[in-house]
Length: 181
Image 1: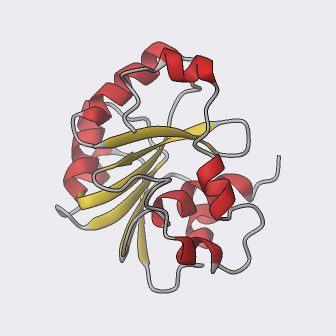
Image 2: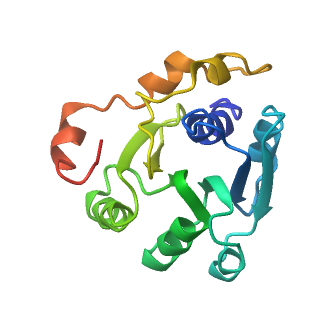
């Protein structure tokens, strides 16, 4: 698979859903490609921390518009991410395959305690991430100008953004009442 697809989708989907993002927090142990994608958003600052609950605990309340998380999430991690996000924040988080229904339902139910919208989306490389939003809907509130005015993208565009949220019926039925859209 093309290595540029994953970082483009992890970064640009939440950033192009957020109305006026200024601060992005990346939680990763190998963020080089994610940081490179963030550099394409000139007016948006980003900070990277390692995947640990201790590092996340040190982040200030309501200090990020977007969190991009590659850390395994439990209730404590999600609570701290919610605390770090501003009132209209977006979270893009990796998770188990959608085929691992029980573990995903648990994670989505925990996310549901903090976020209005929780939707899986295709990363274009055979895996999915979860987009959790406190305010904005990722397909209704996409910032088209931001998504189509970025330079040097190889995969992501506004059409891929919207299409990434299309899920087959068996996934929709399996997660009925859990996915919040």
